[in-house]
Length: 109
Image 1 (tube, rainbow, N blue to C red):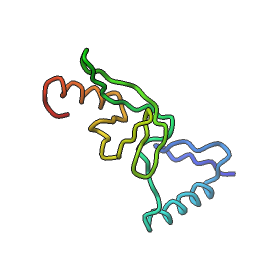
Image 2: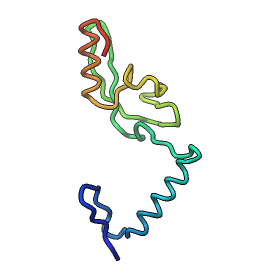
Image 3: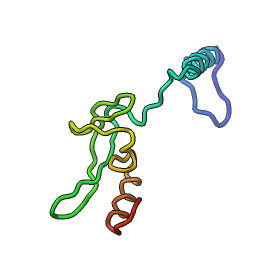
């Protein structure tokens, strides 16, 4: 069994052969051509961030993605479109902090 050991790439599982990796790549390419391969922005259970505001001010709220579809994310029983990513939903704490900082300055992120 050959191991995939190409420098600079992710390491394959020890029981995966180069043939299996190439077959998987070919399958992904076959799906990508007709537009059937999707890359979702996050997975169920991933941590996402929102900016929550109340009478005491605004702060970053850390939540978990409850459901992810082809164009929406459900977080804390609220639905967000992918267009909301970077506006009201953030995939990293750093992006949420930058948006909060911009909000406090009265500008855009």
